[in-house]
Length: 153
Image (tube, rainbow, N blue to C red; front, side, top):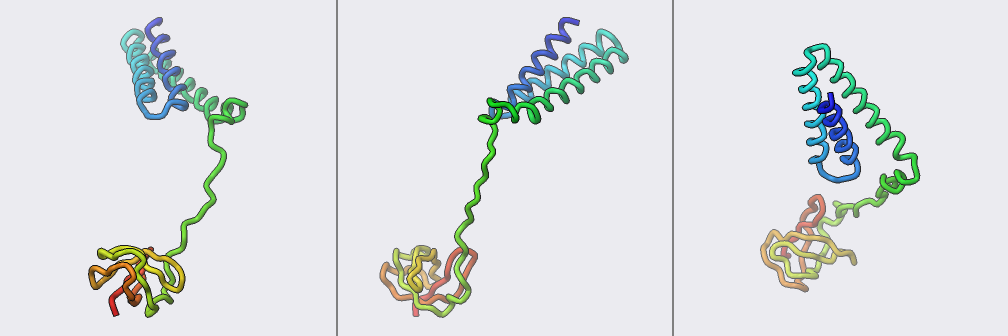
């Protein structure tokens, strides 16, 4: 009985620290300790004792999860541990399809990728005609998801 209680105690402590410590190692070791306690109960006390021990393990894990995910976030210490804010930013929209046919000027060398200036805005670009030096005049021939496709005129 002492071995089962010690395995359960160790397993619950390790599973409890799993919420605080990143990684799954403590959770796996804690689960294995609880499983070992159930196996020892099956060996020592038979099917009835093993099933009762398994039931106790399920109730203890459920109670611990309730404490960790319902009670702990509402405490002063828990409010400092859990993330409550979210990122509200958005990414910059891709280039407009209306740029096709516009004049572009290479801001950086295009080998074949680089940056161009189109209508006063800087865009990531891909040169279909290969290398283009910085300052080269180009024409927008297409628009990809996040870049413009240019050619030498």
